[in-house]
Image 1 (cartoon, rainbow, N blue to C red):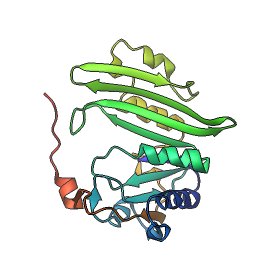
Image 2: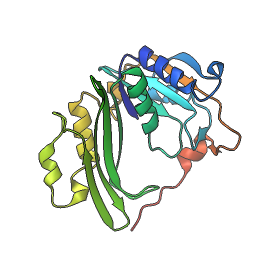
Image 3: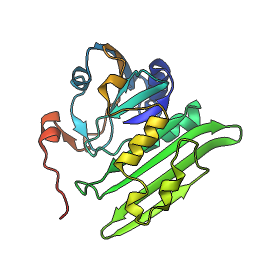
Image 4: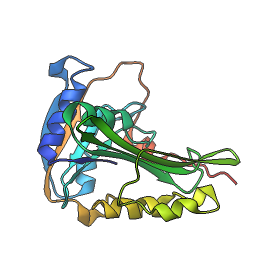
Length: 216
C-alpha cells in the first residue's frame, strides 16, 4: 500500500490522469463507492494481474491517501508514485517490508518523493537480501522522521526491517496496517484501465490461497 499526501479526491483524479497516458483517455475510469469496511472495498476489485490494472484509493484519518493495487506480486507500484510526484506535485511514499523469505527474498525499503523548487526531492533507504548476502543502500538527505542511529546496526538486515518501517511510517502519521486508520465507513475511489490479453491474471481466490514459501 503506497501513500499519497493529498485528499482522496485529488489523489484519485491524479491516478486517473496518469492511467490515461497509457490507454485511450476514455478507458481510464474512476468510480466512487460507499463501503463500510476494508473487506467490502477489496470485493470491488476483479481479477488480479502481474501488472496493476486497478487502484483502490482509501481516505484515512490523516493527511495521507492509501493506494492499493491489484497486482498479485504484492510489491507496490513505485513507478506510479514517481509519476504522481513528478507530474502532479504530490508527496508520495513507496515502501516494502518482509522479514521472511517467501515469494521474494527478505528485505525492506522506502522511497519518499516530494516536490521541491528545483525538482523532485527524493530519499531512498533499502536493506535487501540477495541469497546469503545483505546490502544496505541510502540515497538523498535523511528525513527528520528517520531513526538514523539504527542504520549503524552491525547486521545490515537489522538496519531496516518490518518493525523499523512501521515506526518510520508512524512518525510520518501513517498506519496502513491499522484498520482504525482508515476513514470507513466512507467513500473509496476505484481507478481502472484495460490490460492486454497477454497479461497474466489470477482470481482473488487463487491469490488468497496461493502458498508462500519460506527459505530454510
